[in-house]
Image (cartoon, rainbow, N blue to C red; front, side, top):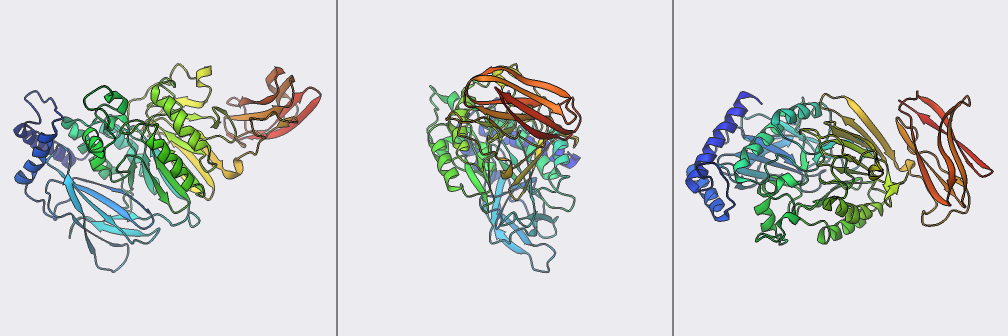
Length: 547
């Protein structure tokens, strides 16, 4: 960060530390306490000791977000050391219109001498640029509302998670992200790694100021920030960690504010109770979920999820985003949270054909699963991508990778990354990009990719060989087939000249649906033929490898 930003952080830390000491929030050896009465005293003390910040001074940091309707609103938060009156100005870009003043609300920045100022600007025009500033004669910035539909232009956003072990790494990734002309960033939890602790406020200072400095496009347009909750936003990480204590989860927003104070005060969305849907017209809905951090997975949250998905069945794209993975790449997939995600969230996802991708985080690696449905690989399944490695130390994929336990993983690697998502009509185009801007994986999905199959609960009445999925493909592809009876099966891949490339299956197999994964890492681009021989029946199809 620039020298002035570092100076601001150090100065604010010293001021806040002095305030904490006088209020009894930090003792001589800098240990923390969760005494709520003292926190209230600290907020009052801030008002008495710190004079209002004049409008002639830029804020320390700011975030743009949405609380609703991204085509017609914008929420702006900024952080100052004076409570004052939260006033800022905006107008449509490249217009001669006068600046419009808007007044918002103020609340304390937890455990510090700063304040959070928030305004929500409404009645904006869709897909339109606006200018804004925090006071007369101060720097002007831009924001852009979202389109009312996705027919006028493609929608682009970046997603990832596990943001900041140190601000230098996060800064590097942010700078790479900001080179892309994206609409917003959607984060799957674990932001500043402050764990809700009173003496870790400086980590939020760093996070917010790095974001403010780096997430601005060259033309001055600020990239909005949406974030779900992760375990490092919460003092004990998970509601299950509070069981059998005198502070057990009680389902109230007061409990959430107390145990995840920074997140619930600093993030305008999703707000209480910590999970919500953000709808972009009827072409996209982002479903932010809480994987057991300030809400249990079973019960009210799953009931809400089922209703939210039913209400969005007509949307073109519905994309869940959450922190703890159901399909892990590093940790044991049989952990409590992973099992609960697969038991409660995944079946709800699978009931709707407009959910083709879900973003998971937490494992500090990269992963992409095969398409999964009914706990098995299926061309009509959902692909789970991510695993959270934006600005953190990396972990090697776990021992279950490449074993029967890790059957669902198509790719897994210790790779820092973010994911660039482009939505164009019914198509989803994903590019997985490292901190240096190199594309190391990609995925294209469309409603046209979905294969109509015989229901898997019934024994097929005839031999079936489906088109491989995906097709074209760049590293591996799934081949599904159905047998009406037990028979000997041979599944082989050939070049167009008739040379045998590999034999995928050669054995007796029972009736029902089966699949084989064809890996082509060592093959050149081109058209290949795959042939199924089942008894005296032979079926042949073509597939295309593109590298």
